[in-house]
Length: 289
Ligand SMILES: Nc1nc(=O)c2c([nH]1)NC[C@@H]1CN(c3ccc(C(=O)N[C@@H](CCC(=O)O)C(=O)O)cc3)C=[N+]21
Image (cartoon, rainbow, N blue to C red; front, side, top):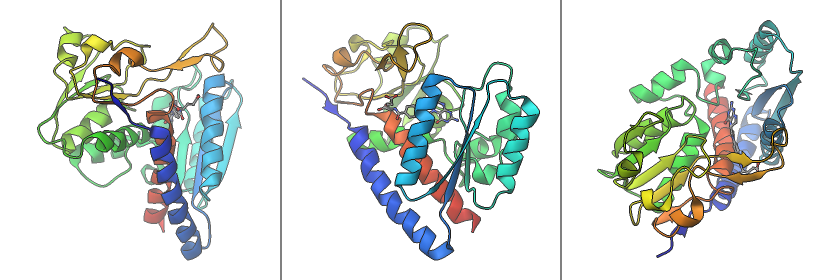
């Protein structure tokens, strides 16, 4: 048996086409474009690739892009002042500070400083709390994108066992929350989980978001399961991160023999993340007018 490939590239292109319509109607009605500000500190080559892609897709969708590139030695105060300036700027509907930040900077206060109404990453505790409480807010982009892809494979998640590997605030925790809201029975696994392979074999839906290349093997997968690979691991020599081959957290070739449906890397969750970022920006813009 061979799994259905869930084509995130195609699904994201379709979503972005819809969003272009929404963006155009917004501009017609409000008299300005919805705007996304992206802040990149330093010159990590992988981050540079993602940020360039975000800027390009923002413009393609008919939205305004405000890029702020700060030197690697930027201090905390300067970064916080920029966030405050973007909070106060009416042309800016969404603010994204690319993570990780250089080691001398503390992401916590930066995330707290972002106006929750402009927090298109959904990382502010206000938005995290809203997701937990089932209140409207801004949901992190990668989890939203992952859920759209899950729904392509299974419409009704009721009672299905979902196992999430990884417990980050950016992906693991919010994706578990979304699966729970969709009535799945959710288990969160992480680096201290015992018998991880055995646990994964009980998953109808397996979401891998740990950042360990090809951790999940073919024999960890229940036949017919939906496998969502959130991993973006670049296999490359030190210092050449932008050049290496991109692999997920799942050993794809093996897993595709067993799974019912699987997302590839690249071309799976990654492109969905960007589409959902644009969607969040439009949602934030609509709520701000
Ligand atoms: N504040 C913040 N928010 C983020 O959402 C955020 C972040 N920081 N830091 C880094 C991670 C990673 N991330 C990706 C986005 C798109 C692709 C993507 O489009 N990937 C393409 C391949 C691109 C390539 O070849 O490099 C794909 O999977 O097909 C991947 C990864 C967002 N992140």
